Image 1: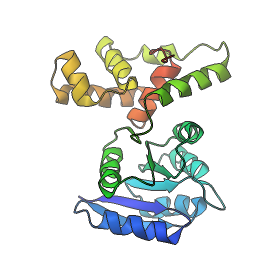
Image 2: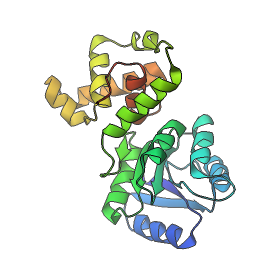
Image 3: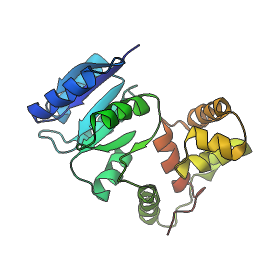
Image 4: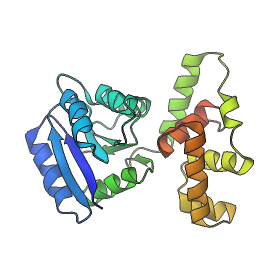
Length: 223
């Protein structure tokens, strides 16, 4: 089945450009477009896309708030945030909002299509220029805001020892294949572990799993 995509951007030329690029992919279907965040939220309820390409700066309702509302509604749609701004603050806010990925608008057609596929599959996606330091900084920021509050270690305790190990490796940015190689097991086994981790912790995808691992202090942020 095709991956159904909703494109949310206030610039018509951008929407048309993305629509042409993605429409040329045999496994991707552009299900609809939205001119602002408010319309994006409504279109998600109507169309139930697999992936929402979400611009950050839009009128009426910005992309970050639209993402929060889509995620809060427990929709099956995964949000891939697109922006022209390669700045940490937008990445942090996008992760907080529940976005599954982050990609710059100057990405190539292939990177855009691959990004849609990755996010649709439940994988985490950060732009090539956005490194693992972002998750570490995000974790330090949330830890500072939490003060001396205890991390939710009881939830980590629901995981098996191997699942906890896999979660820590996810947080360090390793793919399923890399985790499988490090633990000397089949990649299919890692996929099973990841699925169980998400289910036990009530998380949507690997991005949330990575953030959770840092917030639970299962992984120590890089200096």
